[in-house]
Image 1: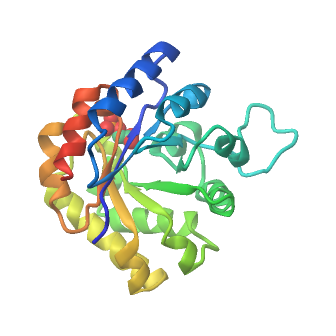
Image 2: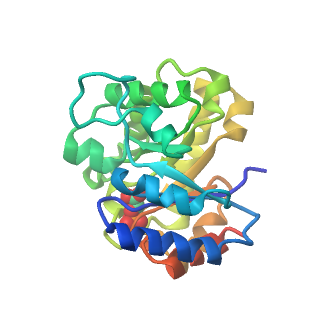
Image 3: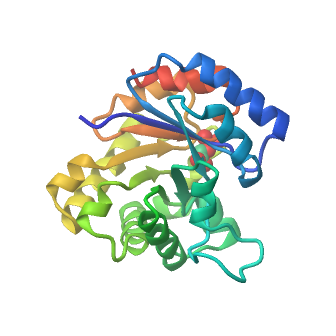
Length: 251
Ligand code: PGA
């Protein structure tokens, strides 16, 4: 049985006081949750404050990105060692906003992923098709290309530590959710791809989160699907009640 994993991606939202208040509330609300892994991924500048509040709790901390070099002249970038130093266990990589707004490639995502694995942190690798790609029947090809490209050079042993987040770009922040059946079809396809690229044992172990307008109202049906093992939550992760509603749907 794969343990459900619910992670909140705050994106470029919150201020320091709001970030601390949110995790203070969440820490209390989620203290009895023993059926799922939980994490929050605040902006870099609030990681330290958030990790201090969550120290010793059942809620992990993740970053939304990182750089692949260990140190040096890379103005503006943050290394994996720095993330580890402030208490991060997870790093989101290849989020669609980084791929499509910032212009990050599979090659760059792959370098970051290898650096995260090397440092012993858990990558949450995002993949997902855009609306025109879905309409052109390219959903599987796009997801496979992002998956294979971003995971180049990863061993089967390391792959077991990777979390995949399937996030159809047309469903992110739009209020449009993939139906549980639509999401499950892609999730099952990704699991077959993991088996093809690695092996069945790895495919059975890897957790595949769904992301894209997941809310308390639709989480239960999505999480009930055989290959949906959790969620990567944007908008609904910014309020304790909404995020808890999704966590409870994983029970
Ligand atoms: P959303 O974002 O829940 O606001 O659609 C999900 C994500 O981008 O990770």
